[in-house]
Image (cartoon, rainbow, N blue to C red; front, side, top):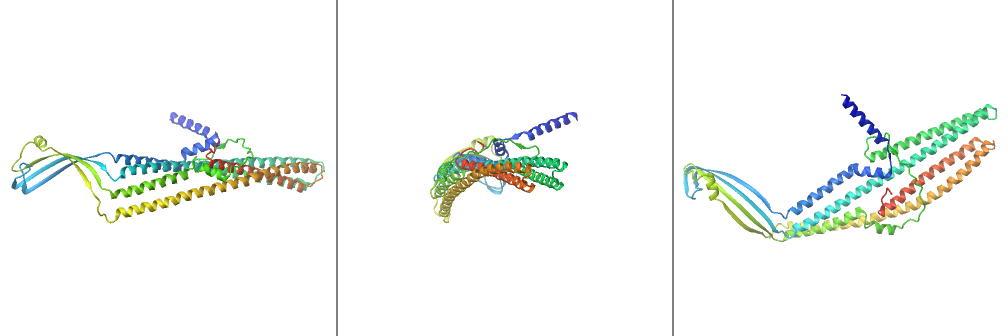
Length: 439
């Protein structure tokens, strides 16, 4: 019993250490790629395509079948000994055989099917890559949202510190008769409002952490924390949508998968046309039998098997003449599927270009907002310093001071939001250029 208690304690302690570690963006993405259910399902689909390819390759191999039959005859039967007619008897015969068939020519269907399976495997691999990209983008967005809310919590706490300082100052002035009691209550109300804002910011932060941990398939957000990197963005010239699109066309899994499937549709047409050709196969068999009846027991089991042993080799040719237009219709369907896949490829290309355009102009807007927010914060900080001096010297009312303080908090919050929005938008542009998100 003590052994089990000790084991549980060790596991609980190790789990606590795991929960308390800080996660970087790289850690989050790597963990999600290993544990996300959608990715695991896509990996299974990829393995299925590998099995299909192996099955297609094995179609070239000969098959081998064994068979055995047992027949009973009553009354007038043909003797298995000398093929004579025997009446009023009961007979029993056994036949044992091994046969094989090797495809010689199948209208090129086997090699075309192998090529089709290869292309389907490549397409499935790109589908897996796309699933990994999608979860990486989602994790990056959720991670930056956590950082954003972490900074908002810091701003809210700074506001509480300022309000506490003002409350202490007003309280001391009220004690010496230089401030009204109403001003003290007003300062307390401001402090309470800032504390409420801090609680709300903390709740929002916890929800952001919950969203991230759910993406990571973690059982609980308890004890989860992120590494707070230095991520002050630099204002760089953004790559044009045309240049990004040129890079994305050779690397984006969604387009590559559609291209592989279009090439696969060409093979499907050839496979359907293969049914117009005759098929040729090589066949072989080795067989023996044993016979006995109530009037003539015949030779022993081993002797009969040896004497009745026979082998046969042959070629089998099948020429399609009329199959109710089945082949013709299958070829038509394959061509229609090719046309549909060509449209899907074109749609994927256009959709990709639209996404890149939207990402680019979102980044441009985010860059402009980030630049202006920095200016707004600098102006609000200077305004707050001046107002604080006026308030402390009795040249400004508490209402004026609180308004400037609220403006500073608002400007700081907007700058934080603009900062992480710009970071995310630029990372999306890097994503389309094939740059790893966690860099």
